[in-house]
Amino acid sequence: MKGHIFRVSEIVLGLVFLCAGLNGYFVLFGFNPIFPTSPKAMEFLGTGYLLALEKTPEIICGILLLIRRFIPLALTILAPILINILAFHIFIDQALLPLALLLIVMEVMLIWKYRKNFIGLLN
Picture (tube, rainbow, N blue to C red):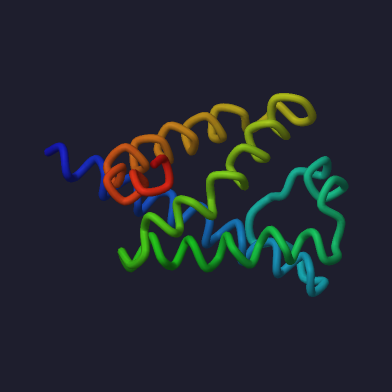
């Protein structure tokens, strides 16, 4: 049962970031987003390089989590993105704060599971 919780976390994080990344690219190329996007978030990200700079790693890391390849690398790349998402939802738009907190909890759980891969960074 314990292993299933980690796999579900990988799948949920992978799907959230893959869908959010693709949604950002729809906006970037002038299409209507598939999922509702916060107007405050779009104002913050704009429709230029910052949007592409954030959404590209989200798509790549989402795919890596879903196919279970390079998970520690994906978690490392997603960590600062998640911190920014959390800060955004604390200080600017509190609407999705529970989702941001859930994503942080899943990220921390997965970092704990793969902690042996990160030990070399702490030496």
